[in-house]
Image (cartoon, one colour):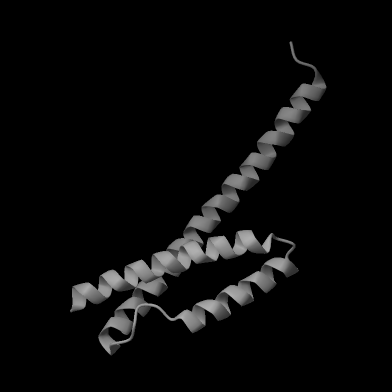
Length: 102
């Protein structure tokens, strides 16, 4: 037999987890949309003879996202690591596209 406090705690935890699940789903959909666009960018760069990476843009984006993170009270290091992972994946995809179009 459980008491009301245990039921309340379980309900609260379930509600938190449900919200986290919804946020995770939104993040996945947003990443999918982002990668659709970066795929088009990679195809454009390959066709135009542009390099897969743009270090100056990457630096600007990281600085911009670090500021957004700070404003949102999110750990700036976490935001940078997350963005760096995405950028590295995009570059990898752009390099693959360039090789396929060569």
